[in-house]
Image (cartoon, rainbow, N blue to C red; front, side, top):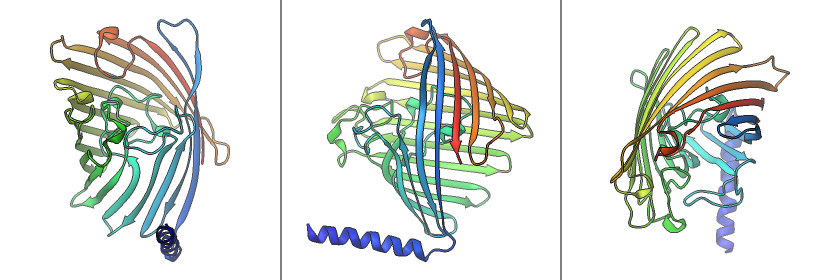
Length: 339
């Protein structure tokens, strides 16, 4: 026990010495809350809630970096989803920049599957994450190697993680950590206003010991020109929840237009297809129409207002896939953030 304590203390002292030797270095404290009002069919009234209430700290140095992100509005904050840290902890990681283009990251953080999923919650184009969200591998503890600025605008992420217990497409058991792993790899390309990425991942024995691996493929693109933003993303999951032959595909197309510097109009159309062996295929459509508005900031505190109307279509209540709105909905969100 004493040797373990001494070793832990030595790691802390060595880390502090490394951080203190770096120049320049910076710490950033941040936080945001997203307050919501929602109306969805067939309910009669409005429901008031909060999507996220989060705070965090980031460290940036020449060689080392790190961060912590906590969510104070998560369900069962002190409990653990299989393979992950307690639910209140979204991110906690430390990183090492090994060279100008390469970095190694250790801890719990977002796996590199999903273009929209890897956009921070405070910067989303729509007020909710959409139909593709349940199919990503989500956050998981692990180790990831990343490269940026490789060749003519290429990048890469390669990681190994604990079982992806926070993914909506898995049903891992608590004792699978150490026996099963999740894997993810992504290739990116950035050239001026164009962004492309393709990713592949899996989580072993996704429904518990002895079940099938969950496998996912993702391809996405984004293009910005003047006031216009175009995005599209396709994600395909195989053997959801470890069940042989339970598959789902989701694709969306997104258009954003800034009519003023602080006002953006958006339209996003989702189509999802669910397939389960022995049953008929089902489809779900969600179309988001709305706006993002940024009122004048007051010092370091900023506001954002999001309004979305969601049109549901397809098989709706008969849809056998994960996530999505099965009826029309009205979503309103006010975000206050610092800095």
